[in-house]
Amino acid sequence: MSLTNGHCVSKETWDHHNKMMLEPLSVNDPEVFSIIKKEKHRQTYGLELIASENFASRAVLEALGSCMNNKYSEGYPGQRYYGGTEHVDELERLCQLRALEAFGLNSEKWGVNVQPYSGSPANFAVYTAVVEPHGRIMGLDLPDGGHLTHGFMTEKKKISATSIFFESMAYKVNPETGYINYDRLQENAKLFHPKLIIAGTSCYSRNLDYARMRQIANENGAYLLADMAHISGLIAAGVVPSPFEHCDIVSTTTHKTLRGCRAGLIFFRKGVRSIDAKGKETMYNLESLINQAVFPGLQGGPHNHAIAGVAVALKQVMTPEFKAYQKQVLANCKALSNALIDHGYKIVTGGSDNHLILLDLRTKGSDGGRTEKVLEAIAIACNKNTCPGDKSALRPSGLRFGTPALTSRGLIEEDFKKVAEFIHKGIVLTLEVQKSMDPKATLKDFVQAMSQGENFQEQIAGIRAEVEAFAGQFPMPGLPEL
Ligand code: DSN
Image (cartoon, rainbow, N blue to C red; front, top):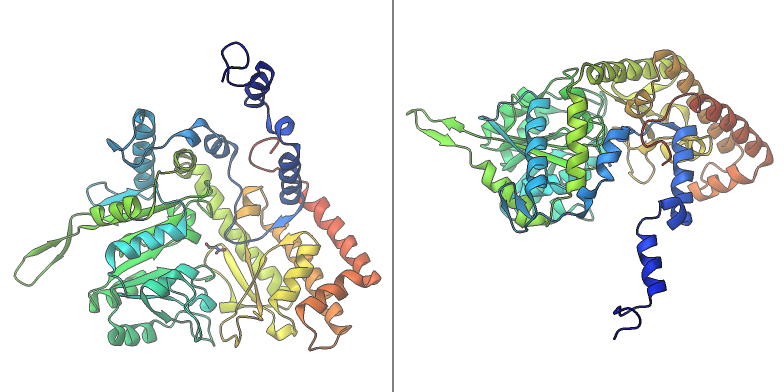
């Protein structure tokens, strides 16, 4: 029914609606704006050492926040189920080209799907593409540095969908050395006959032996998937070995060392897969299997704003500045590792080939949960993590630290020595709090003691002020205000 001027709503309400659609966030939703401002403050004045995180550039965030968010485009370039897709087609093709170029791939031999919403859906798409329901998958165990999506299950429960819908058998690291036990993987693969082996990690500081894993995959007629999510930026810059030479499929997220917005990519081989003794060729058919698994198998419309952000990030990846950045990520990681060793800490495997280290607190009589809480209180963000040989995942004894995010803010080796000092102060304080308590006290009791003791609170406030003053000196990439 018309109220005024032929409208079904009042003119005043309609005018307000139209004004609302044009208001900036700060005016339109001060509540969300203020939460984002607080997060920006946390990121700016804290030390971000979570190995999987990074700071996307301003250009990436502008593309992510663009009108590309508004467009539906189920299907692939040139074959969509929606009209008005000429520009998203152009964007998706550009993103595909850049993805291949960024990793030095020949488009005759490799294709790429740029639609996965992130790394977990990308991996699940790969499994559904090439492994039949309840087919067999082998990945590095989560407590040994693998990822949830690589098939994680415990003795009591299948946790990851990968272990629920497929049969999963983990391979492990040697608990003494912290290095992957490839011999055991080879033996077990011969018994388990996997359809797919995953060469990928979430907390492993050493280079993978892709050639060895290829050999094991070949012995079993298995596909070899590299999940390079953590190290894809390092690979693109050529500062760690590339999996492409040895793998059939390579998946990645785009927001870790690759420094884009949150999304996923799946690279797949094209052309000849194998030639038998009589010279008969078997061709790969991964392109159609993987594309169909992503859409319509698992996903609906691609996130075109994310594809825009990824395309921008991939252009940056191909610059000399990005290569310099990745070299610095490695140098900073070594500096952090060495400085912590100098402070008397044990680093799993004794160091790192990449962007992360795992600090083992067992020799200090503490664990990852307690130290993570104190470090958080002094504005240092990191993860608790199991160490090789940990008996329970409920009390992980390590801390995972990564250098990609702070390196994006311009920190160099000398700065990471300072970062190591702050970490050391946090751990010393953790031990002090622990000493004041019953050794069997729970983590909850620990957090209570930490925040109630006046002396502890004072010390936390003092170190936090130092950390904030230090972190605040470094520029923060991204959008100026948000
Ligand atoms: N959860 C991420 C990590 O922190 O390693 C990987 O997806």
